[in-house]
Image 1 (tube, rainbow, N blue to C red):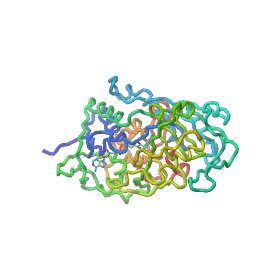
Image 2 (image 1 turned 135 degrees about the vertical axis):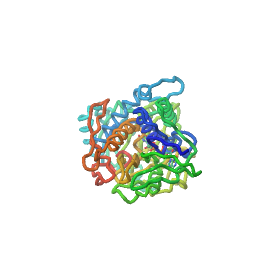
Image 3 (image 1 turned 135 degrees about the horizontal axis):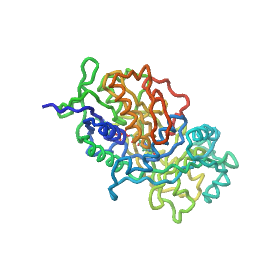
Image 4 (image 1 turned 30 degrees about the vertical axis):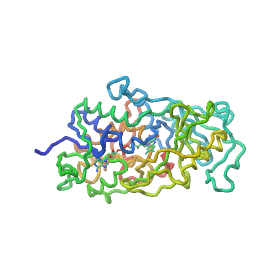
Length: 434
Ligand SMILES: Cc1cc2nc3c(=O)[nH]c(=O)nc-3n(C[C@H](O)[C@H](O)[C@H](O)COP(=O)(O)OP(=O)(O)OC[C@H]3O[C@@H](n4cnc5c(N)ncnc54)[C@H](O)[C@@H]3O)c2cc1C
């Protein structure tokens, strides 16, 4: 007999798992299907899992702020607390450096005020007090290290920065996804691994179900594309890749792993920093090591790649974010061997995700997470559940966009912000900061 579910979610990354969880909590028989062996093993496993609230749009910040509250009370979100087997949230705060390019963070400051997100403005001298080893000259805008001007200050002092105390990171993004998987199963949902979806079956513009590569057929009137960097391929399977304005594609991102010299106090080893002046970010890890990455420079490589065959080695320019950071922290030290993680981002034209229905009835989209939606995933599960329930009850979301109440923080956002047919959002930073 053909198996049948109320909803099939293709993908058991952090996004798909959170959607499965929230639908299962509503009493739906759900199936998360993934070609990998465990949940959270796809691009989620490479995530730096930073939880920060400074986005360029109200909706982006509001969703991230709501997400913060989920991570901060993780056992409450998943509904259990198995002491040794829980992802942990480490609150570090995040310091963002003001530049001309980010308009001295005026937008992020006013959005934070509007959403009541705590922040502190720090002068460059105050930054120097917190990070005594920092060189506080301006070096921006970022340039490549082979440029003659590299390492020469462009301003005697940075403008200062904004410190957001309510920010941090999740220690283990894969374990967090597995926590959600467990929560889903406790709510009656099912996961199936090592199972590749090769056909999306449909009839009269309505999904019927999926067929796996081994020929197994599983039926459902609802299928959610939560395929991460494979989102475009799944849209092709559904035959809808040409049907909406905003599209998705996979690109590489390199996060470099750096062991700090000892003693490392003052190197910002315990604070997340987004240094827009040099164009590098730091995310602390354990025992005096950090992840360093490029936070969006004009020379970052954003070429599309095939998620089934991309170069998983650090590129020849891979050290650039560390060289740039060494301008700020001259005693940092440059490692002889650059190590790190190469992950995939599933980006859209404006680096804002698509959370929407599609033109194929019963086929929903939770895609284009653009390197910045780990933090929001617990809320995306709730958002997509609201959307799916409303659409399946006959609501015309395309003509009368739904509103979504962020229950923990009290904001209300309109979901056409995430529409597949929106105009490219000119308020975006057009980078991973969104
Ligand atoms: C290097 C890196 C750093 C990041 N840092 C941050 C950060 O600091 N903060 C933040 O908020 N976000 C960050 N992100 C982004 C965040 O991690 C992603 O937005 C999020 O993990 C995407 O989750 P997902 O579930 O959509 O995708 P995935 O985790 O990729 O899950 C998709 C799943 O779908 C499965 N799948 C695809 N096609 C099929 C098929 N045909 N059949 C069966 N299964 C299929 C895949 O196997 C995969 O497991 C980062 C991402 C990367 C890569």
